[in-house]
Image (tube, rainbow, N blue to C red; front, side, top):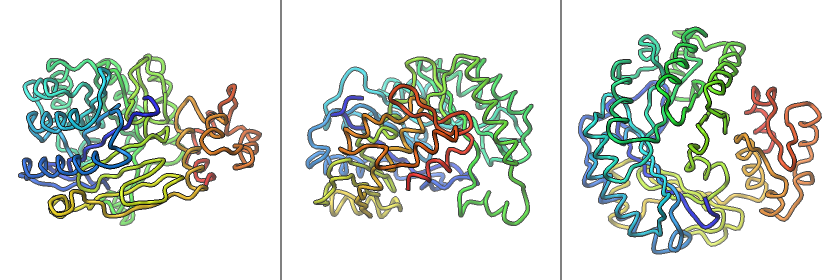
Length: 391
């Protein structure tokens, strides 16, 4: 990603069912207004690309997330990509990722997505253990997962990623080992492995609060985290971020743009955007500004018809917020936090801004590698606590 490039996130909010751990802006449905929603996305793109900061930039990455973007037809995805190409400068290395769920795709649909311009897939596998899929509320079967991954290859994708989830209630270490063995045997270019998060307001969290299920212990979750990193590293997947592992050169550039504080435009119902400089309808954004769209899909579409956009909330970052976010996002990546880059961005010393960095280093939670600070093995286990110290 060059400093002048931007990223675009396209939110498609519908799923066939809603997972009990999900807190994203998603809606279970059997039918959805696909053409009308695409019309709204096109209107929103037109509005944003006619004004700063997205009126004269190069597009570096595109990510279709959700929800389940693979529910949309390839021709709809192609329409949106064509509009992006018309509105932005693009290069030959444009990364275009689409999320897909097993059971919603086959070889023909994947081939259609590939022909439309999608060149990277992220498939929501979560586990190869039937009982764990059931515990997570996933609709697809293990056989459908395997078929989807093979269909992706048959459909022409040579940049494939899929997700695994661990620390699921009652999951054993042996089950995690089995998931990791199968994942590495399939040999995708990228693997994401996330500890299950119990988000407020989700059904899974309500079940924990009601005593229906128990969370994995902190000790088991830590053991699973270390197992994931060790097994994937042994198989040639470098951990370039806390939960993300890739073959050399196959890192997710779209996510790297987020972690490195780059500008991104989110279009669609409930999508988020960020600019480190300025934003539409916001005069003072010297330390960055983010905004969010209206969440309800029908209201989102209506807003784009009347105003051209669906911006619902703005937040201008204070200097302290911007500095803190720069630090904790950088520390998510294995390459770590550069004091030189911090000083160039904020015209201030990292040591002066966050004096506790030295203490974290002395305690063995951060490590120095040349001009960069990285989380130590101990620090990785309490990463959220370390991140919170920057606010």
